Length: 294
Image (cartoon, rainbow, N blue to C red):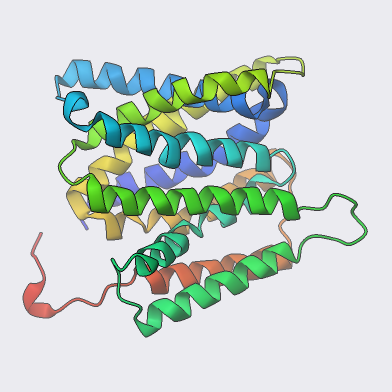
C-alpha cells in the first residue's frame, strides 16, 4: 500500500471514528430521524458539488434502482438504527458493534453461495459472535432497561451493511463509485423525511448539536465517502476493510476524552474478539504468482 493510500486509510478511520461522537452530541437535540436527515442531506449536497466540479458521470439513468436499494440498506436503515442505539450506549461500544459488519457480510455471502466456508472464516465468525456476546454481557440485571435493546439495534445496522455489501458485489458491478455514494445519500434523505412524523425533534437545539450535525454530514459522511471509494478503487475492497480495525480505537479515545465515557475490561475483551474474528474473515491468502506489483 502506497504512502498516500495509508494516509487516506488513517484519515478515513479518524473521520468515521468521530461519527459516533458527533451522533452522540446531536441525537438528543434532533432525534434519530433528524440527525440522519441532516447527515445524509449534507453529505449528498457535498457529493453533488464534487460531482459537478469534477464533471463525473453519476450513472443515474442506468443504475437508479441499485442506488435506491443502496440508499436503504447502506445508508438510511443502518444510520437510523445506529442513531437510535447511540441514545442509550456510548460511542465506544457503538464503534465496536460497527466492527462486526464484515462478519455479517461474510455470513450472508456464505448463505447465498458467494463465498466458500473456509475454516479460518468459520473460526472468525465464531470469535466475532463470542465477542458480541461479551458486549451484551455489559447489560446489568440491576438496570431496568439495560443496553441489550440498543446493542440489538446496532447489530441490525451491521446486518444491513452486510446485505448492502453483498448486493453491491453481486448486482452493482459497473456503477461509478461517486454515483453510488452520491445517490445513496440522496435517496436516503428522501426516505428518512417521513420518519420525522414519528420521531420528531423534542429537545432544545443547541449550537453544539448543530455544529456536530454539520460535521457529521460534511466530514464523517461526505468527505469520508470520497476517501473510502478512492481507497476501494486504488487498493481494493479487502484492503479498505482495514479501516474497520482502526475505528473503535479512535471512537473509544474520543468518547473517553470528550464524553467522559468509561472503557471497561468487558469492552476491551469484546473489542479484541471482534477484531480477531473480523481479521480472520477478511484474510485472503494470496498466491505469489498472482500478486500484483504496485
